[in-house]
Image (cartoon, rainbow, N blue to C red):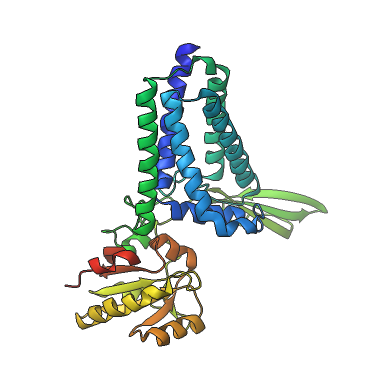
Length: 365
């Protein structure tokens, strides 16, 4: 039992640190996922939405620190009970999401590893079993190092977590796991390979055959039945390939200009997913850098999910020399974790992506 607890303790600790670090790298993205959970129709806790970012930061730092504490053997009672509380809550959350199909991705590993709701629940059940093993054999958890070294490691770990979060919040995630990272081509990301697996559907056809209701199952073909058609139910039994970039449009007056704009040799995108939540003071600096871009021969566009009343007012107030287009809010949140943020593209390939705090680093060649 002693050796089993030792191995499980290290494994669970490392897993918590990795999972926490991935979310620590992108706390804004994790806060978006929490907002999804807090929304009506899921957990129905809308009063927590304004605190989503603060909660996300707290949760990921605790997750990393609990992993460190478990490996080091620090305060085993507090550590084990914290682990149990967290995994029971996460297991409930992933089961609720999977059973009621409320949230399609738990965000357990951010954008680095995508898990289906049932995969997330299975992962948490396995973790729950492992943590119960640790709980039963908690007497075997002993400190790996002396108390002075242990406290030093804990302090350094905590300071590193806080410092890392502060950096990514004021700039951008250090590691970009999304399909809009620098060097990626958006148009290529929207394409589907010729040999990509296609979705498989099961059709349950209901017919009235001589006064009896009968069901015929096919994978798409209309069955040859000597009876009267009543109804058909469709179920996806195997998901097809989904391009990493989807729901990407750049619309204006109901027309999608994405295909044409992604062919621009020099394109600057100013992205503000929701102007009500944007740092509007930054648009004075946005005005300066976009004017510079226009003089250098770049085409500049704004992209927002806000309505034309808001975008027109912003344009007029800051004397912006570019027009805004409509793009889905979730897509814009995925593209850049800054509101506003700026991208520079060359024929659809992202060559620069910056937080509004780093606009002075923009290079227009």
